[in-house]
Image (tube, rainbow, N blue to C red; front, side, top):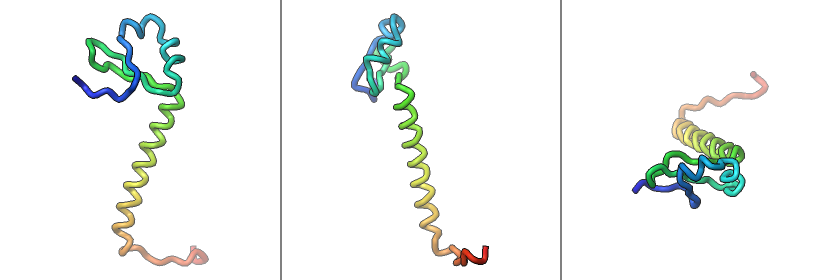
Length: 83
């Protein structure tokens, strides 16, 4: 069985009957849409998707910061007035 990353699930056939109702009922939580008892896709609200994208961007920035901190010994001191 595949891992599920949602507390709520629905079959593909039930989802097709009224996707808007599934979205309303889910609130701001993801719903796993299942095909043959395996996740076919996850349905998320636009606000939840935006939060996920922002979290991924933040994670990328954390990694970039770590990389730059490892190279801080190569930094050059600059006086802001000289710029």
